[in-house]
Amino acid sequence: MVTRPREIWSNWAGSLWFLVVLLCSWGCATPYQGGPRTNAPSAAPEVWGPAVEAPETRFPAARAPESRIPTPTPAPPTPAPSARGPAKAGGTRVAEKPLDTSGLRRTTIHEVAPMESIWRIAKMYDVSEQTIYDANHLQPGEPIRIGQKLTIPNAKGLRNIVPLYPSNQWKYLVIHHTATEIGKATIIHNSHHDRGFWQGLGYHFLVDNGTLGKGDGQIEVSPRWIKQQCGAHCQAGGMNTRGIGIALVGNFNYERPTPAQIEALTYLVTLLRQYYQIPLSNVIGHRDIGSAKTDCPGRNFPWRSFTQQLRQ
Ligand SMILES: [Zn+2]
Image 1 (spheres, rainbow, N blue to C red):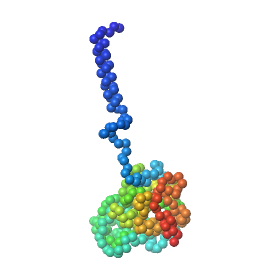
Image 2: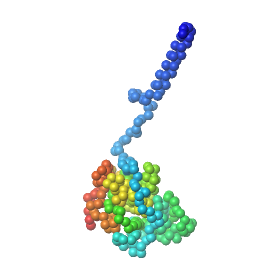
Image 3: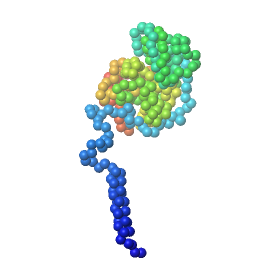
Image 4: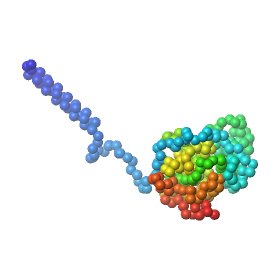
């Protein structure tokens, strides 16, 4: 086939135009290779000062085998008449320890934490359940929700309330820090839930440091403990199924636990050790588990003095 000159020019110009468009679009699609480009997006934010460990970033991706746990106990425990004494192995017990010993009666506002009940809140502030129902225009048995603000008239201090359930499951106590400066159960519950732990808060207990409206040394009981479910705090060594996970709010790579936190932790660990017959050698830090690659509960956690207190 013969091609006339006008067609040759037309085809040549068309090819040139196509080549220009191709080069331009290729240039736009090519990733930035470096060099001066003032509006280039930065790959990652700069970190100034000490790097802050994300809260328990080394959590195992896989969820604990919660589905294999026997039927949970959704209702709050029934307090035994002799509950205020030292716990003994056997039936369900509820241990109480005053945290705020000011003894002054005052009206306070309580924000409902995960799986807290009117029964629990009444015991925490040493008031009757009916007092809370009346002050908040609630009917007995009416559900309350996480984050709900409740008026507690004539609250008498604050107590740590620790339920103890008969079980042969718990052989270890694993101590963590949250690696955050502030915290409370509700926030960590939501955070863990958002990261794929659909049962929320991965620990069994949280010991607060007095931030976000919580008491310094306040022990928050996780829904996992109330339901007697496996934790989602340490997959290494099977600790999610064998170990009770206790976290202290704080980042102990850069600070130390408060004296009230250590006092509450010592109380809680002693209580759990006695009830579940856990030897002192099985009270361990997250980092002590061979395959766990973490420095949790932090370089400044006072292990020596803590274990000395446990021996007393
Ligand atoms: Zn940890």
